[in-house]
Structure formats: C-alpha cells, structure tokens
Image (cartoon, rainbow, N blue to C red; front, side, top):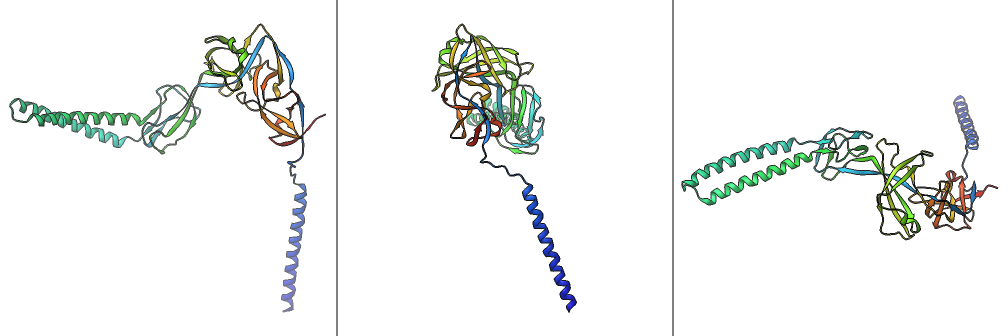
Length: 350
C-alpha cells in the first residue's frame, strides 16, 4: 500500500516538473519572438511642393491599355466537352476555344430533317390531288405552312448547334479562363477573357491650357517607363470634347505594338514639343503612389502619413505638375513609402 502511494507521489512530482519546464521554455521562446510595434513612427524623407519650370518638351502621364480586351461569353448552354485553350495561350480570330455537348441537338435536327422530308412529300401529293380537285385548297395550304414551320425550326436548331462551338472573336492572348472541362454553363456565362495588345491605347489627362496643342491623327512620341531613353511612334486617336471637374481633357494615343515590347498596364507618357515653358507647382515624381490615372502621395499631417489624391498636369520625367489637391505648405513623403500605409505614424529623417 505504502509502495503504491510512493509511486503515485513520484509520478505527480515528475508531471509537475515537466509542466514547470514547459512553462519556462515558453517564456524563453516568447521573449525571442519579435512583435512589430505598429504604433512606432517610421523614418521617412519628405519635401514640399515647389515651383518648377517645365521646358519646351512637355510630357503627360498615362497607363497603356490593350486595344481590345473582352470577356467572351457562351451563346448557348450545356456541358463543356472540349476545352482547347489555357491561360497564356495565343489565339487567332475564329479559333475554337471550347465545345459544348450537342448530341441532343443533333438528334433533334435529324428529326426535323425527317419531318421536313415527310411534309414535302405530302405537299407534292396534295399538289397533284389539288389539280384534280381531289383535295381542298385549305388542306394544301396547311401542308405548305407545315413545311415552312418545320424549316424555321430547322434553322433554329442549326443556330443552337452553332452556338455550342465557342470561337475567338479576335486574335489575342487568353488572360483568364473561367470554365473547366466538364463544367455546365448557361447562355451568357463567361468563358474566357481575351486581350489583344497588337496595338495599345495610352490615355492621358491634358490641362485646358495645353489641349489645343493636340490634333486628331497627330503624330506624337510615346515613352514607356520601363525603357529608359527609348520612344515609340503614336497617333492621337481621340480627344475628349468634355473636360472633367479639374478642367483636364482626356486624350487617347494609339501605339502599334506588333513586337509586343510594351505590356498592358505599364506606365507611359506622351511627349509634346512646345515653344513656351511653364512654371507651376510641382512634386518629385518619386513621391508618386499608385497609378497615373489616380495619382496619390503621402502627406504628413499631425505626425501621420495621409494618402492624398491630386490632379496631375504635365511632367518632365523628374517632376510632376500639381494642378489641384496639394498645397505648397504640405510635407510630401519622397522616400519610405513602401514601409507605410494610410494613417501610419511617421518621422522625418533629419
């Protein structure tokens, strides 16, 4: 009996020692784990917008877009029995993308063909009988209408059969695939997204003072940020007739891209030579956050980084003109943006 008590007490003591050891180990591990202090101020560099003189060569910022980019939907419904493309594949206009199960429609079409054949035979017989006044004209007329109705039904079935084959409406690259082999889809269901970058569109915002410098079909030079010092030939394809609230006009430039040196989504700019220089409030281009369509910067207010949108004008590669949204007294973050987000605490590096 005493031996059993001793063994039980020993087991309890061992368990207690193990628990204490595990707790001690956890405290040591917890001390080694780094926990980021989200309230700590991030060290950044900042500057204020200043007046900058833009010389005779003006540049307007934009983003390259595909000349065609559409989500292709199914005209019919059914089970996908053939899928001929993967994301990244290049397709030509008219190429088969997918095929839906058409077995039932094929049978219905065969039945319609048999029905038409039978009704045409009846029509021929009734025509002969009508010549001998052996059948009423009404019965002959009904037979002719039956033939026409059956032919219309055949055309409908042929159209439905055609819709079971999904083809590319234009050449391009499959950038998204929304179905898989065996999927059951309905009419209008999205199948793939096709993007054509054989030509590109660059849309830029042009201030009111500069809009008359652009003309339809005007040849311009376009630069892509990824290629330093290299330019591409473009042509003005559209000029907006309505300004936005900031009195900027949208100008669209079309750029041939047969070698596909530029990809959709890249930043670009259009350059325009002018006889006059312009002095305006500007910020360093390296302060820019987000896309050129929606230019934003981090402004320091009350020790916090505030993400602010502004209206941009011309650019010379190093500076961007500020039309509206920023003041000369603002502190604009020019370095350290990757380490912060809206409302982050920041400290200016001395």
